[in-house]
Figure 1 (cartoon, rainbow, N blue to C red):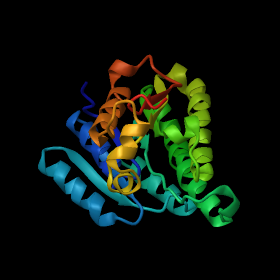
Figure 2: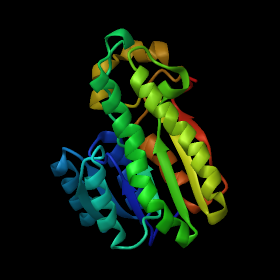
Figure 3: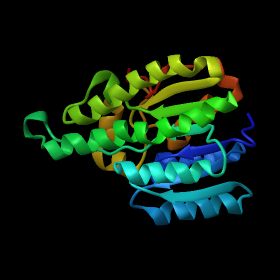
Length: 243
């Protein structure tokens, strides 16, 4: 499933999942644009790793909650040509039970996951459409499908992202562009490891284990390939049977 000649943006590429997605797309031949907000050193190291393995990768640092900064970053990206693969992976948690949730917690989570999707994808999609080939993959969550205590803000952001996925898919399908979302469950990472012990995972997940970032990356890689050209507007769960 070669992606040679395709330029691919991965937002939130400094975390475990974003790094795995970037490595998979690079292995398939894509030229990577790696975004981070605060962890510039992590995406720079990842870019160097991918280049050292014979790939193409550039690191970008900008704040997805800043309209002007994100617009300027998109202009810089387009100087190298259309970005034909966009993986909207960036997202944050700021959990609290709803009666105790602050306005700042509500707005921050939605601003990164939902408004960040708009700020990046909207300026990049028209150049993508002109090439008559494109893949947009939005990283959602099982929380958007079944809810989760303490995550009304996160579930709202990812649920809206799911709806945006379906609507945008209808707009661009005739131009060879697909839009899908993947909805991971519990995926092994420093954040998940701190929140769920092995016993809890066994009780929650029929597969009796956490997923691996590489398993989600393989799904994203497939959706970004030519082989997935007839799959669009879908929310694809990857959660070990939780839903």
